[in-house]
Amino acid sequence: MEKLKVLFVTQEITPYLPESEMSVIGRYLPQGIQERGKEIRTFMPKFGTINERRNQLHEVIRLSGMNLIINDSDHPLIIKVASIQSARMQVYFIDNEDYFQRKFIFSDEDGKEFTDNDERTIFFARGVLETVKKLRWPPDLVHCHGWMASLIPMYIKTAYRDDPIFNHTKVVYSVYENDFKKPLKSSFRNKLLIDGVLDKDIALIRNPNYINLSKLALSKTDGAIIASENINPNIRDFINKRKMPVLEYQNEKDYVDAYARFYDEILSSDVIESV
Image (cartoon, rainbow, N blue to C red; front, side):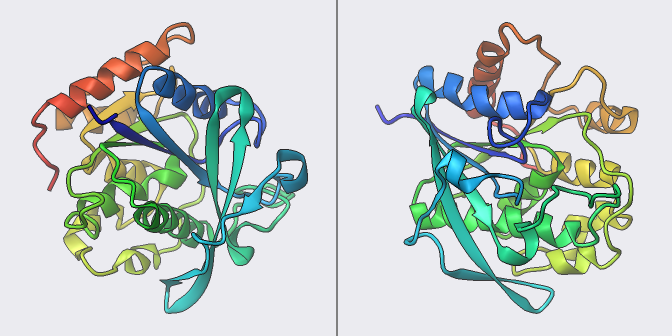
């Protein structure tokens, strides 16, 4: 029997970024799911703070070289990879000189959030999906962590819904206590409109703030995971109203088993697709 395939898309993984609630889950959850018999792939952005030499990143030439058009401009997609030897796990990194080669992650040294975080988010999401297509690796389930992965559910359920790599894929979104303060650019919605994405698909982000971006992700997912003890109450209300499958917050001890059971529940159910 062929192993079920789970794709992890996250904005933080330790040891590449400092330890946090999300980066620790990003590191140990894929390993735990792999040890429980599923095939995995893991993606994160290649932020400029990540030391390539120390972490032994190298470019994957056969996957690099594509250009993604965002706001009528071409942006080269560079794919790098590193291995966490103790976990027998590879991590793929989405890189681009304009978006990720800077000394800070989301904000500058004065704490001012980067004005192009909207395009960085789009580039990351589309870069992941195009790379998975190049790998010819159809995931049964995609698990997204953090707001920088929040566009993945929408793209899978719209622009990529008829692609044979993604046409049977279920999506799970983890909600963390990791917001951004300043809304993204008002032009963000127009930049999302590629073939297969209609204006109605992104109506939730007329005001592209953190809450609405989270709602957009959750409106296109098959299940939600509460990954922090405290999440924004507006997002919690949205989840409750959708009556979607939800895994409540898990303690550190046995969350991998709980997540694995939740995946199986999502994969075995005939969840009504979001519209």
